[in-house]
Length: 406
Ligand code: ADP
Ligand code: ASP
Ligand code: MG
Image 1 (cartoon, protein in one colour):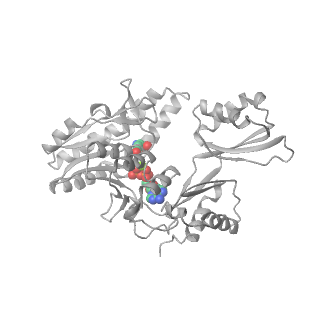
Image 2: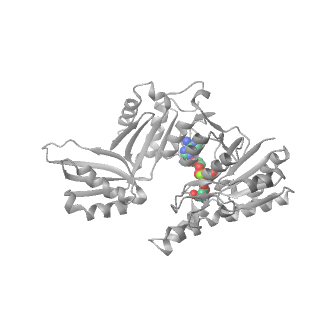
Image 3: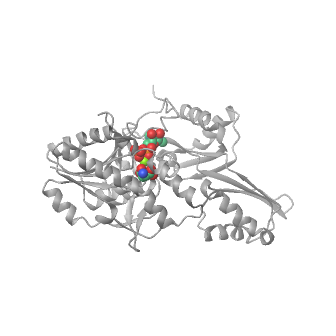
């Protein structure tokens, strides 16, 4: 007998019929004698609709009320799945974030889980009751509902698995596992049997939405065995594992893309000490994260151009903050560009192999795609391109690194 956490994403609980199928899958594990906690997302599309309603009502919304609205989707699916399980004769009850309670910090809209007391859930599991837990939501220090950021049900599931010391955490989604790149864009993407925590973390943080970044962080820190698999068939999925569990390590394991970034170029910035601090300080003060940065060489020793990226959702705010400081910063012009994509190739094998970046530059050059910004880390090379080249660049790189499925 094992204790298992299963998480079902939005497409897997998109309507009552699919919720019934999920219930059937959960029942299989219960019948095999396991203790089950199940985390659910809202029905596909629901959270987007809820976010949209809050935006329509108030542009400068109160994040606490935003959370009260957007957390509601998971309440519906948790209740429905508990009902569907009961219909199959399985003892089950729903748990909202505040009922567990899943305690978080107070950063509404992207709260972090701090603590999950599990005594009561464990007691009931031992009596054979399935805990159906609403994902994405928690309870803040102010006793108000918080949410964990988009895609946050993955994190709810992994955190619950860690707190329950579950044997594994199964993430059921609408693809059969983690692929070498998004299978919806590159038809030749290949499913990986295993991927390291580190590579999964990098893929997720560079845009692969199959797992929320924080869920991977949490799995890595608490050594939770995460498996990603399809809720629509019984094909084996992808196991997220330690590096030493992978026998044949490829140099490049995967390619991620993110359309969530925007580029800002400041023209003719004074080339003197303290300028970068003067520009990025105010952005940090407004909680605007800067990702990639390039500064051009100053030809005359007086002026330089500075290009960097921020989250697309922060672009308007970033422009406003910088324009307000224009007099003191002394740049000649500011050019915002939301139509960019960041593409990243990832692999722990890069530590010991040279030439990965060069291969990327050459492949893009052959397709006549201009690289706007480059950044690298130990196991990743990222480039910023015009958004229109997303598909072309992904497919070309996928082939160039030998990742295509045969
Ligand atoms: P869920 O609703 O189940 O949480 P998501 O939409 O959040 O599902 O995540 C699954 C999606 O992630 C897939 O449909 C796929 O388009 C996308 N995706 C992006 N990169 C990858 C990748 N490398 N492997 C698998 N899926 C990926
Ligand atoms: N329903 C939330 C979202 O769409 C959380 C999740 O699905 O993981 O972001
Ligand atoms: Mg998701």
